[in-house]
Image (cartoon, rainbow, N blue to C red; front, side, top):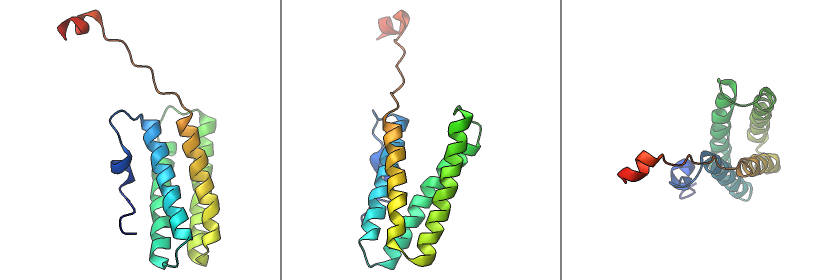
Length: 134
């Protein structure tokens, strides 16, 4: 997929963007790559898109199983969802079936929407001493 931007994290990160906004942008980018792969007859593009999406979900799964601040239920749901994504990805690859990409696109977009709904953390005001030194 020439020029498709597999370096989504690098191309989507902005200095003012929160980590949740970055995660949402990466998932949305993967959804766009999957949609493009669905419309092509290029087997390599199809498999590269699935591989790219699966790498993103591997990161999500790794985060979910490591110690983190997520509530147990959300952590369990992310693990279950990532396992489903793995299975759906393997089905799509085994059958070379573009229709199997729809569910992956929908999952990415739903999770991206969830990330976007998380309010950014409030910035702590600078202390008086810090303000005076500026």
